[in-house]
Image (cartoon, rainbow, N blue to C red; front, side, top):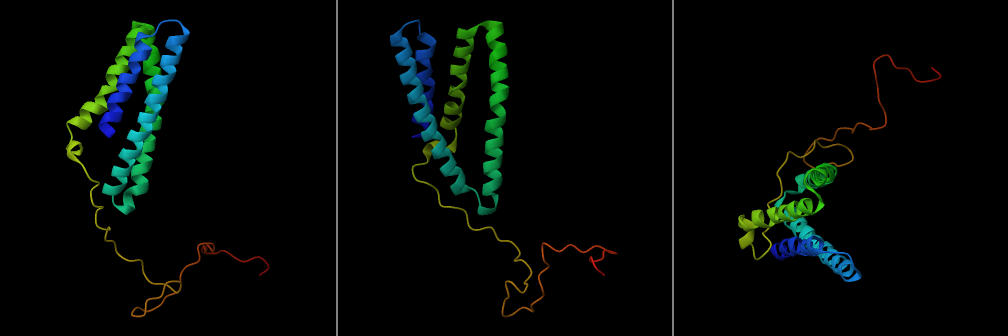
Length: 164
């Protein structure tokens, strides 16, 4: 599904490349954009599902943060490059270059081991970490109980309470 969505996304750009003035081309571009956005949603959902399955639980937030940072950070850079390229070589040539760049994820996926994936992989085993030291909020029967420090009270040397 992901490969089909990536291929259709690049093919949908053809309407924009071939367009000329007129209502029919405006409708064709609108339909192509709708198809492109639907494919982007399908490919994004699939890649996030795979990423969440193969990433250990302790790294889920980091993986999502890096993914968001990369995609959000690339947009202004891509807009700046596209504007500069459009000024330098022209709008149609820049759109053609962008269409060719849309084929990069498709080729990358076609050459990766994910292409042979037919079923979602099993999630990795849970990450083994040292358990936190026991405290009075989470006592264990076999361990001695110590009081937990309060996160709201901060003691510093030489500090005094008001009224003393």
